[in-house]
Amino acid sequence: MNKQSNNKYDDIINLPHHVSKRHPQMPLLNRAAQFSPFAALTGHEDAIRETARLTESFTELDEDQKKMLDAQLQMIRENLEREPECEITYFRPDEKKNGGSYVTACGRIKKIDEFAHRILFTDGKALPMQHLFAIRGELFQNMED
Image 1 (cartoon, rainbow, N blue to C red):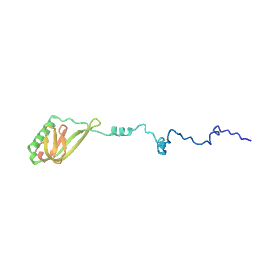
Image 2 (cartoon, helix red, strand yellow):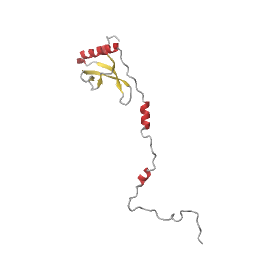
Image 3 (cartoon, rainbow, N blue to C red):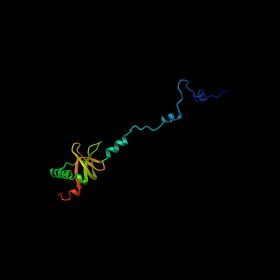
Image 4 (tube, rainbow, N blue to C red):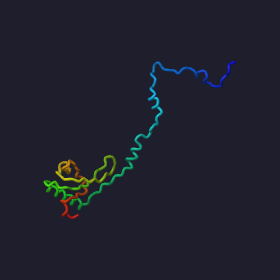
């Protein structure tokens, strides 16, 4: 007597696995990659971090502050042979978003490049002059704040 089964796949369950003659079998490593997690929001974490990064606003100097900076730059020009030591604070605009940050550089000044609008230090640093905020140094001790 033949026992009748209720399983509808009994007729194919014991057949050998089909191997294509036309298409090569996929390596196991590639097959595993099919099941790796999908990152639908690639770069989203970076975008959130960038948005959260704080920048400062540029503070426009008043006329008195501009005159003071001009006088200090002139004093530096007149004393370049002494390579005066200065601490210069300037605004560096952010490359990715509005605003930027105030940066302070210290060192001995070698040259003021009027053509490129830069202040050159003896150690090779070059600062842009268009966003100067403050200059401090021994050279200016007699100047009023």
